[in-house]
Amino acid sequence: MAGLGTPEILIILVVVLLLFGSAKLPQLARSLGKSARILKAETKGLHDDGSEDAKAAPAAAEPSSEARDKAARLREEAARLEREAAAAEGGQRNRGALASGEPIEGVPVSDPGRMRQG
Image (cartoon, rainbow, N blue to C red; front, top):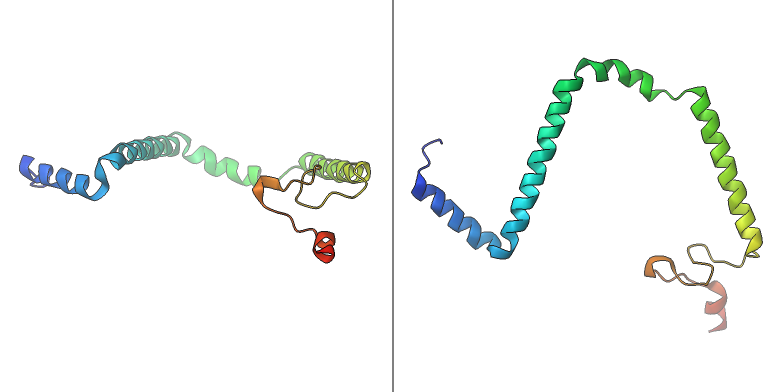
């Protein structure tokens, strides 16, 4: 191992323990293991797929007319549903707020009417 003996490895381990502390070492080991598994899976995928991906990539990059039509229909449906929801609520809901007036994810939503009254 490049001239590293047992004393050198022990010194390196003590330095790592001092730098990161005993609480962080399990997290570091877990993340290192996860990274090694991901790297292994990716390299295996590259070896397995090889030339098949190079041939399939240009065809997959260009959507078919059927996919484009479906996407357009979905966009129209989403716009229709948004209009119906706005009409059902009477257009009183602030953008970024729930129907009850609560802010989304704890972020307060400014209410211009409330600011003018105060």
